[in-house]
Image (cartoon, rainbow, N blue to C red; front, top):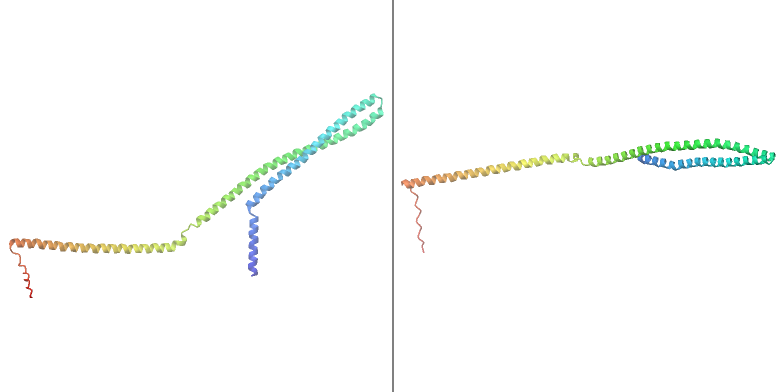
Length: 235
């Protein structure tokens, strides 16, 4: 009893695992997974591009501050306020350092953005290739399944199951046909003999009649026996 239950459980799990490992289902899931990666990749690229844009905006703002400070330094020097010019110069140096750092970060961010675009391009090529291969494999599996179903249908059209009775009945039919044919031949043969015998008797009668006529013409016909006279009725 326990052995049977164990076999049933093993068979159930084996069927479940086989169903889970269905190549068509797995390939379709792979296609969905590839498609799901595209939005995430676009989101990542958008974040990288946003960082590039922020650095460019920051560089623009720093350059504007640098331009304004340079004007203020010149104005302070013209006004004889070298101390103020020194303060502006200190701020200008800080802005130059910030611009240098911004330029480095912008270069790295731009490289990251270009790399992300190349990665997406390569991914999309690979995705299209994998999708085509998967769809072709799915079509092949479905075509093979259809062919298998057609083969199963045609395998049901078999004559092996009736061979024994078929041969036996054919033999009986041929035997019955032979018997009926033999009976017909015998019947035809018997009918032919009766007809021939009848024709012979008719010819014999005709010949006797011809000879009797010649005998009467020649007056040598044998006397015919007289018919007895009818007796008179007594009252």
